[in-house]
Image (cartoon, rainbow, N blue to C red; front, side):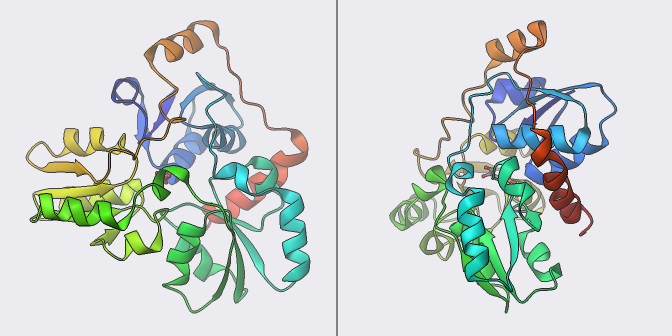
Length: 282
Ligand code: 13P
C-alpha cells in the first residue's frame, strides 16, 4: 500500500492508494491489511506508520526529515519535567519516536485541542511546536507551557503576505495552518490542519481561498474543487523535505524494496502507548 501526505508532489499523490493528513495516515496505516507499506512523506510519519501497523514500512527517500521534529529531544524533556513535575506531556506527532516514547500523549493538528482537553492534568508541557501550542493555548483554560520549536516552512509566512494576498484577492477566504505564527493566524478566517482545509473548502459556499500552508495541498484542493479558485499565500511555502520524494525514487523503492524504516525496540513500545492513547480520544 502506498501512503502519501497531502504535501507530496502531485504526481506522487496521484499514484498513492491513500493521501491524507497526519492523523488520517496514522489511522490508515493502523488498519491496513497489506504486508508492505511504502510511505511518501517525511521520516517521523513513516515511523508512526511502522509503529501502528507492525508491518514492513519503506520510504523512497529516508533522508527526508522534519526540522521541527529535530527541535526537541528526550534529555531536554527530562529537564523540563523536573521543572514542571505536575505537567502532562503532550507531544505533536511531528517528533522523533524517541521523544514520543517518553511523552504521555501524542496529538496532531486535527485533534490537538481535543487531546489537551481530555488529559486529566491542568498543566501541559506542549512539544515541540510553539505555533500549534500557542493556538491550543488560545482556546483552553489549561496552563500550556510552550516549547521553542517551529516549522521553518510555516514560519516563513508573514502578516505582510496575508495583507498582500487579501489586496490581490479581496473575495477570498484565508485558511492558515496552526503551525503558522500567531500574528499570521489572527489575520486569517480559519485555522485548520490540511484535512480540515480540504473539508472546509469543499463544503463552504466561498468560491475563492488563500491558502497558508505547504503548496502541495493545492493539488488536492484544485482537483477536488474544480469550480473554485485557490491561491498560495506566499511562494515561500515549500517544504524541501516533502519535495524529496518523486516518481523516480518511488519506482526505485518499489522495485528494490529499499529504504526500510525501523524503529529501535527500546522506543517502539513507549511511542505506541502514547500514540494509542491519542487514538482512543475521538
Ligand atoms: P497535517 O497534515 O496533519 O495538518 O500536518 C501538516 C504538517 O505540517 C505536517 O508537517
